[in-house]
Amino acid sequence: MPIEVRLYGNLKLKASSTKNPAGFPAILKVDAGEVSEVSDVFQALGIGKDEASHVFVNGEYSGLGKDVKDGDRVAIFPKDMSLLYKWYFRRVE
Image 1: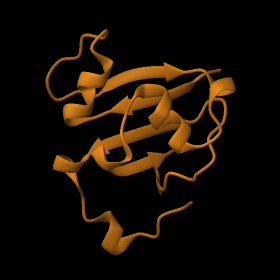
Image 2: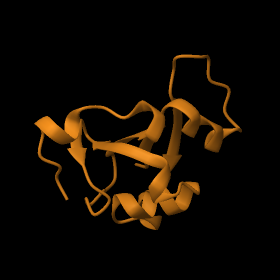
Image 3: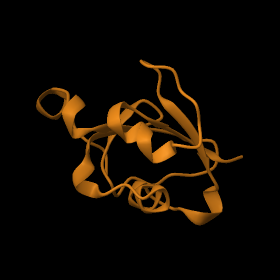
Image 4: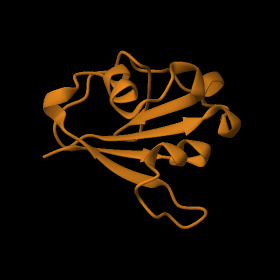
């Protein structure tokens, strides 16, 4: 089972092969055999670490060192959609 990655905002442009209506994320699949942590997902999709503000793995605010495995869901938000999570929630690495 692959890892489901949801890209929001201008990061949707990284998934130009998919057609996504405005207001909806781009949903991509990444082979779990190719990645072991969130930073590997960034690399597989060509996303620079400086392009994202927040990452969630299975709904949990996470960092780039968070492990990912088969069936996980990863949501990546761009800098221009930054949230206040960093002040209120602890990031899981």
